[in-house]
Length: 148
Image 1 (spheres, one colour):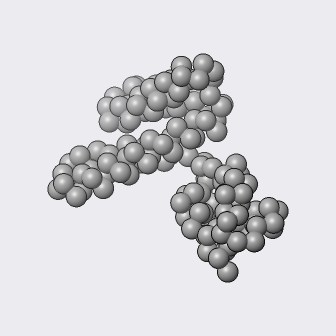
Image 2 (spheres, one colour):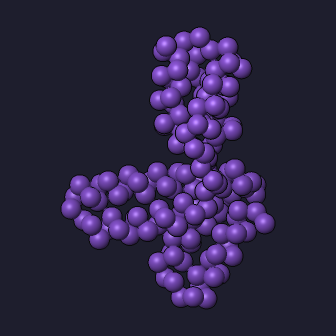
């Protein structure tokens, strides 16, 4: 079962259980997926769906920080709930040692010798780690490794 099919099945389950908040979050996700399919005129693969989820998660995190700074805990809680629903569809996250091993392998395979080669290393890592690691943290780790 593809990730998109799983999301559709979860939407049906939320409808049956009358879970309005969960249903709303899943419908937002399906709308974003459908919009991307229409824009690109093709059915999305799981990797494309994961990238859509990542984008929506980033939007939710930004909204949470803005709502909290504006003293609106009610809206922040709603965004946190949507974020938790979205996280359920993300692939299993890698632990720190697996990420470090992937960074070391990418540095060796690209022959990177300094911070100027960071783009090559990140391009090599992006395919394998997309959706499975925070790319901001990976970028910081690569920069640290290349500045030695």
